[in-house]
Image (cartoon, rainbow, N blue to C red; front, side):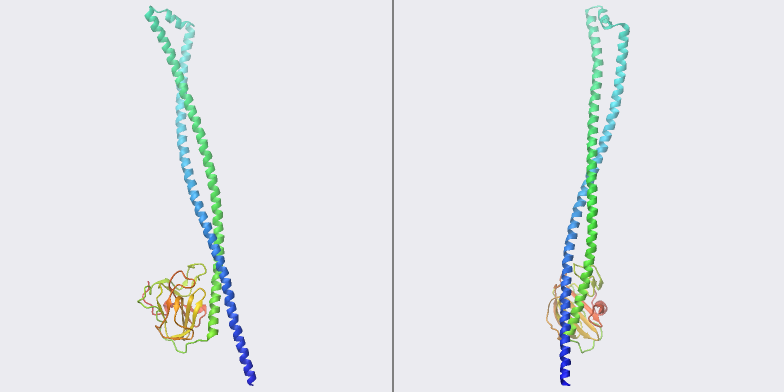
Length: 382
C-alpha cells in the first residue's frame, strides 16, 4: 500500500514538473514569436515612414510644378494680350499704307494724264531762276515726303510683324513648357498614388502584425500567470472587505494624473497592448504601496511589463503593479495595506516613467481585469 502511495506521489510530481516545463516552454516559444512579430512591425513601420517621407517630397515637387504652371499661364495670358494689341496696330498701319498707296496711285494717274513731262513743265514754266529753284525743291520735297511716309509705314509694319512672329514663337515655347510641366506633374501624381497605395498596404500589414502581437502578448501573460500560480501556490488566507487603497501617496508628484485609462486605446508604441487592462498613473520613480492586506503571488520580470508584482488580497481580489524601477518584496511575503512594496519606473515596454496599476476579481486571467477606478478610493483625478 505504501509503495502505491509513493508511486502515485512520484507520478504527480513528474506530471507537475512536466506541466511547469510545458508552461515555461510555451512562454518561451510565445515570446520568440512575439519578438519576431515586433521585429517585423519595426521593419514595416520603418518602411512606412520611408514611403511617407517620399510622398512628402513628391508633394513638395508637385506644389512647385503647379506654381510654375500658374506662372506660365499668367505669362501666356500677358503674351496673348500683347499679340492682340500688336495685331490691332498692324491692321491700323496696313490701313494707313493702303490710304497712302491710294493717294500715290491717284497722283501717278494724274501725272500720267498730264503727260510724262509734268515735273519738267513745272520747272520750265518758272518765271525766273528763283521760282525755278523753288519749284524744283517743292517737287523734290513732295516726292521725298511721300517716299518717307511709305518707307516709315513699311518699316513699322516689318518691325511689328517681326515682333508678332517673336511673340508667337515665345507663346509656342511657353505652351511647350507648360505641356512638359503638366506631363511631369501628372507622372508625379501617378507616383504619389502608387506610394499612397503602398502605404495603405503597409498599414494593413501593420494592423495585422499588431493583432498578432496583441494575441502573443495575451497568451504570454496568461501562460506566465498560470505558471506563477502553478509554481508557487501562494494564496492569501485572509478575507478582503471594503475598497482598495490608492497605490500612491498624495505627497508624490503626479499621484492623481492618469496618463492612460482602462479600456481600448491606440497602441502607444509597437508591441504595446491596445486593450489596456489597467490605469497608468503619471508618477516618476515614486514609492508604490500595497492597495490592501495580502500575500505576494509573484515579484519579478514579466515581458512587456518589466519589473512586475502581483498580490492576492483574498475573496478573489488581486492587484498588480508594472514598469517598476525596483521592488522590495518576494513571492510568499505577506504585506499590509499601505506598505511600500516598490518604486515606480520605466522598465519593460514603456513610453516613459509611470505606474501601471491593475485590479482583478475572480482570478488572475485576462478576462478578470476590471477598471481600478471603480474599486479604489482614488483621489480627484487630472
